[in-house]
Image (cartoon, rainbow over all chains, first blue to last red; front, side):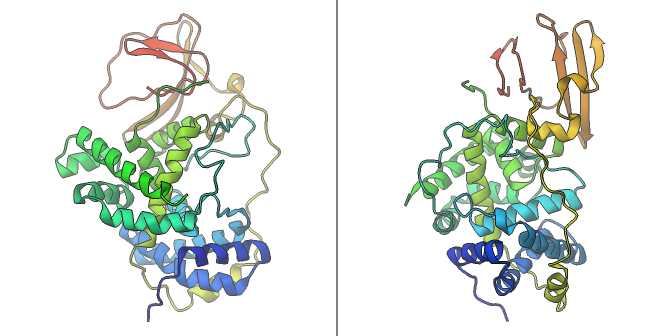
Amino acid sequence: MERPALEAARLNALVVSVGRARDRAAFKELFDHFAPRVKGYLMRLGAGGAVAEDLAQEAMLTLWRKAELFDPEKASASTWIFTIARNLRIDAIRKERRPEIDANDPTFLPEAERYADETMDWAQAEDRLKLALADLPREQAQIIELSFLADKPHSAIAAELGLPLGTVKSRIRLAMARLRTALGDGT
Amino acid sequence: MTITHHPGEELLLSYALGASSEPVALLIATHLSACATCRAAVSEMEAAGGAMFARVAPAAMSDRALQSVLSRLDVKSPERAPGPAVQSDVPSPLRAYIGDDFEKARWVPVAPGLAHLPLMTRGGARARLIRARPGAGVAVHTHRGEEWTMVLTGSYHDETGQYLPANGG
C-alpha cells in the first residue's frame, strides 16, 4: 500500500537528523519516501527496472553519506535528492561527467546572491512551486516537463514538437517568470 | 566586473534539469563559477526540478532493497576528503579537464599566436579552449549548428561586439 506523501518540511527535518545524528529511523522514513521516487524518475527517463533500482539504492547511500552537507536554506530535501539522482544518472547511464561549481573555490566570486540577505524557506517554496507548475498554461508546462523528462537539448525538443526554437525559448522565459513569482511569494 | 552576456534560459534550464550534454554543461558550469545572477537562476530551476521530481509516480522498490542499503550504510565510502583549496586561475569546473594551471595545459599550436586545446566531443557537441596572443585574429570561419564562446581572461571582439571575461556570446 502506498503511504501518503510526506510534507516538504518534514522531509527536510529528517535529512537534517540523518546529517546531525546518523539517525537510522529517519533514514528509513526517507528511504520509503524517496527511493521509489528516484526509481520512478529514472524509469521515466528510460532506465530499465533493475538499473533504476540499483541507482535508487545508490542515491540513498549518497543521501546517508552527504546528509551533513544538506542545507535547508539552500534547497528543499526533494530538490537535493533530485540533484543527487540527476547526477547519478548522468554518471552511470549517460557515462558523462557532471561539471559543477565548487562553492569553496577561492576563485569563486560570491557576488550579491539573490537570496543571501533573506532566509528562504525552500520547503514552503516547493509547495508554491508545485501549485505554480500545475497552473502553467499547457504549452509552457509541456516544454518544462519535456526538459525534465526528455534528456534532450531544446533544439531537439523544438524539432520534435515542430516548433521554432524561438518559440520554445519564449515559453521557457514565460514559465520561469511565473515560477520565479511563485518562489518570491511569501519571503 | 559586470557580466553583460549570459547563457539563455533554455541552456540554464537544460543544465539544471540534467539534459545538457557534457560540453555544454561544462560551459554553463564555468559561467556559473563567475556569475551569481545565473547561479540564482539555476537554483530556481533546480527547485522547479525538485517540485517536478516530487510529483513523479513512485516505482516500488524490491523487498530486500531497504535491508541491502542499511547493511551498506557503515561501509566507508571510497570518496576522498576534499583536498586543500588550490590557488588557481582555472575555474573549478575546468580543472577536472586541464588541471589547475593554464600554462601546463597541453596547448596545440594552430597558427601564429593561436593555440587550442580540445576538451571533449560528445555526440554532436565539442568543447575546446582557445588561446590567442593579443591582436591575434581568428580566420573567418563558418559553423553548422550553434556556437557559444566564453572569455576566461582577456577579451575579444567580433562583428557582434566586445566580449570580456565570463561573457558568453
